[in-house]
Image (tube, rainbow, N blue to C red; front, top):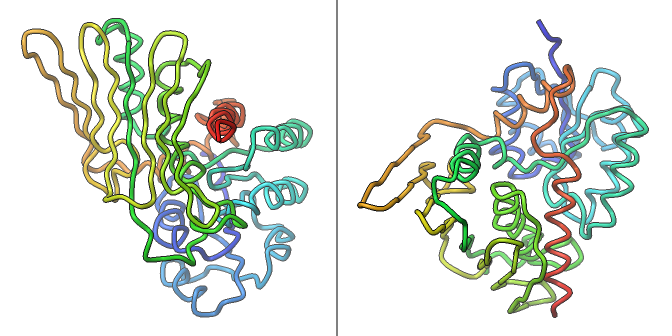
Length: 321
């Protein structure tokens, strides 16, 4: 039996409490062992989940803990590179929330440090661990929709009532593109294996961050269209439209929160196939995949190189302004 990976979390964020701490707790081969926070009240919320959780009052103290094997980093976006590198230098494997970097070139130093240390470092891009996306890729590669011509996606929510949210602040790496553009862009790249040739965008900003982005792009074999926004009623959807059929994912990104994961394949003759995953937790699968990759030669599903490619597309979009 493989040894259990002992996890520490840098920072007591709301998302860490609601999603990743429970996922680490539930994942096979993982143990939630430590948390770095100076807030007693926040620490108590995590200890309710894991009573023997060790609490460190600084990030540095957690990284110095010899009983921690891997670190999850849910800090504000602008702090991701700094603490990912510090964790690697401390001899810890690192799973960092997306976006790992604010521009593609910043990935290079993490890739170099990963290679030189031999440790696993990755972006917490959970959707690649959900079976609906592997089924989508399988159906696409099997030619079930014929020649792909058009990909359409949307991911929206409204946080206008929360101006102090880090996503609404430019100094913490806010904006809809860093936060959720990674999903509409990355999922299209994952299924098709293609990279954009050119992009165009209409972007609306408030307080220096993009709150709406309509992006169109030409890929080698298809046209791409997406909308991301932090000022619209919540909606998420991805569709892959070919000359022989269309494949739709109605809850592609947050199936544990937004609704039930469902993939529908429509083909000629009104033939429709629908697959559903009502119980799958992609955060748990993400942790389990990370732990397996530490112990074995199994390549982690979301490599730094893949995440860098998504950031390159975001950089291309921002360069259109």
